[in-house]
Image (cartoon, rainbow, N blue to C red; front, side):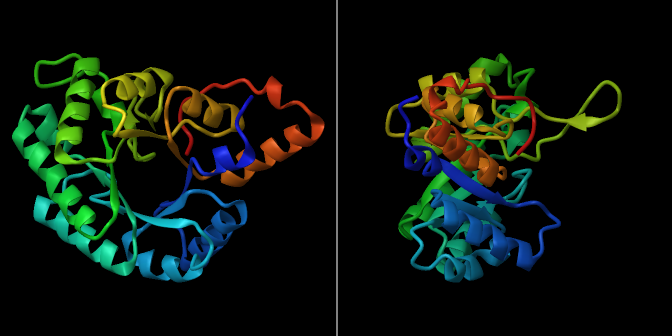
Length: 260
């Protein structure tokens, strides 16, 4: 493997989004992110201002979710939420598309929705990652196959000004035949498809299904530049152990099902 510890650490957006996380847990998560020198934390909107203080001088960026996790907020609500997050110090925005509008074929609405957030974020010097929630798209929609639907979303997001397209929220649970709820999150197929469907100026982020070092390496191999993860410490400690043992070349890159 030719990736350094820093190469991989700087791919990670450390996820601090579970609905039950307390302020103390958010602070501890920010400290962990600083310890491992990841790219960013992805944190709840109300905690952005505090996260900026916790991470000041660390070199770790603060990102914030918008319209999370289902993307159904009104466009103006998403825009205003973005404005508030940026004023509080967020420099990256992870927004969720309006999937109902997309599946219904109202592409002009979807594009305007994404553009409103991108325009607001860019006005403040922040960058935008647009989340598709691919687990909801396995049957396609609007008369398109699943792959063509995702390709169309990629093209729309690029036109609207997105800096990244992103596979999942990590919370896109789908009802299964047995009545349980589950999800896959990022898949190798979708990462390759999304990378091929955007120009080089748009990056790709994986979320969900990446729980170990091999998974992170696979994201990188497939052209992903960021990965949402909560197993940050386990992933990066595994790198250090393998580096010390001289076994980094034995890492097998594979993205699993579920887990964030």
